[in-house]
Length: 144
Image (cartoon, rainbow, N blue to C red; front, side, top):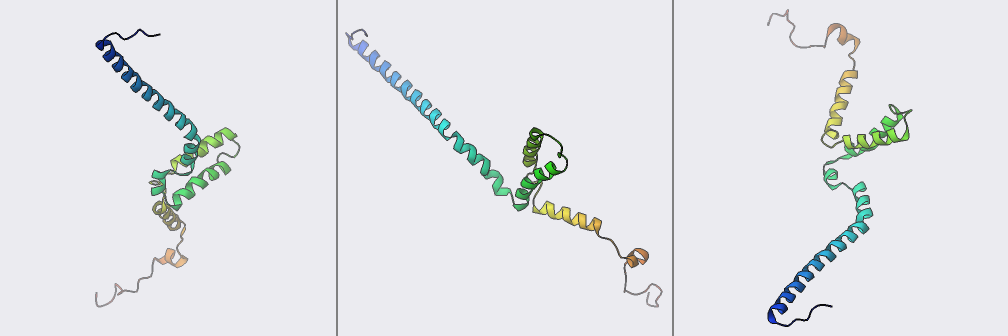
């Protein structure tokens, strides 16, 4: 048991002590409540984090999403064909993170396609032999 209060100073000290204890208890219970709340909501937040990355989804277009899905599949089918499951999983996670909206979007994809078509596009036999047709004024004409 506690000692009995005999004078006014002891009463004031006891009131202050109880007020401090009340504040400490409130802080303690708030911390416990938030910890329990975080533990309960952790699986929900994990699932939300997997499916919706708000900052990346705002900037990502269809090409970026396509790349995040099919680049790991392409790697697993070609380069990592005879590797183990762990290496394939790590490579898939890394390749998904490497496909960023700033590096892989519709403009970049269109420029790659343009470069590939200009490289593959062949000239006709006549253009290779004589160059492109020019129907302007011939150099030997009297007007030149």
